[in-house]
Each structure stands twice: as C-alpha cells, then as structure tokens.
Length: 167
Image (cartoon, rainbow, N blue to C red; front, side, top):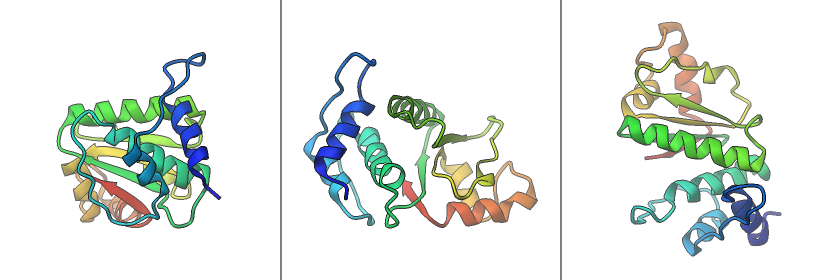
C-alpha cells in the first residue's frame, strides 16, 4: 500500500542533484496530489512552484512504482511551445535517471521537425509523451499530423485510452 513516507523517499531520490546529496522534500500540494485517487483535477499553482515535478512524481509513484490499476499507464504532456517540450522532456529524463527507471519508462518527444520514435509499438509499457498541441491533438482526433496514414488508428487508440493528459 502506497504511503506518504514512500512518496517522500521517492521525491527525495528523484530530486537529488547528485548521488551524494540529499534531495528535496515535497511541498504540501505535491504530497496531496500523490495521496489522491486518480481523477480529473485542475491545479492552480504559480510558476516556479514545481508543477512539472509534482505531476511527474505522483504519476511515477502510482503508475510505475506501485502499478496502481487506477492510474493510467501513459502520461501525455500537451504544451503550447517547443521550448517547454524540450524543458519538460529533459526534466522527465533526469528524474527517471535519478530513480533508475530510465530503461523501464521511455520519454517520447512529439513535435514538428523531430524524427518521432515509434512510441506506439509498446502499448503495454509505461511511457511519457511530451509534445506540442498540434502533434498531440491531431493524434487524439485520428489525424496524426506528420505520421503515415496507416499509423493513425494505433496512435489514436493509445493516446485516447489509459492516459493522463496534462495541459
């Protein structure tokens, strides 16, 4: 059974700057998010207060570490700008590396001009999809911008089921 102490340990390990340093402790709203059952939620948190870290650690805690059947297998991060996609991918990869999960959970970047990995070939594996709104929403509408037409239904099915969308 997931506990607050388990989440604090995970958060500290995920946020340590190097192997010899201790990590940070989660803020109250981050702990509350990790303790909640999965549901639709609006989070109003100011810039710089750890929204990316809070959502990533809560999803990893439930979906990857505890394999909760109530939490979705894929995390879809829909962002308006390419720079935010790059930043979020880097943060997710760093966090997964700190936790030793970078071989188990793959981060896929979906934005124009990037040769897209075939993220839809492993529907059973947990994954983090980070992309611009045009790329993600076109797939959600079964139009897969910049994808081969034959791959549209696969992407459509995977991006519309068993996913936590963050916008």
